[in-house]
Image (cartoon, rainbow, N blue to C red; front, side):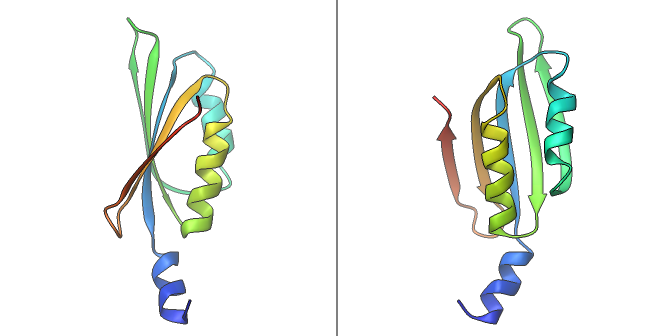
Length: 98
């Protein structure tokens, strides 16, 4: 990979969508976990009747940072699924923890 590709990768922003069981401490656990990453957006939505949460997180800083954030999110208790959408390439990948 040449220097131009490395530069483009550093500007990469990816949306991570997390589907999880909603509980009171989930927001705090996610915030602590994501503190080490360059988060450009964070939206937490709940469906109280189904006890589910959908969290949308935009992470910048290149492919390695995004992969680290997604890996950490997958390990959180109560997280059922993490999907990613790459802003630079408009690709979509779905990864399930099941």
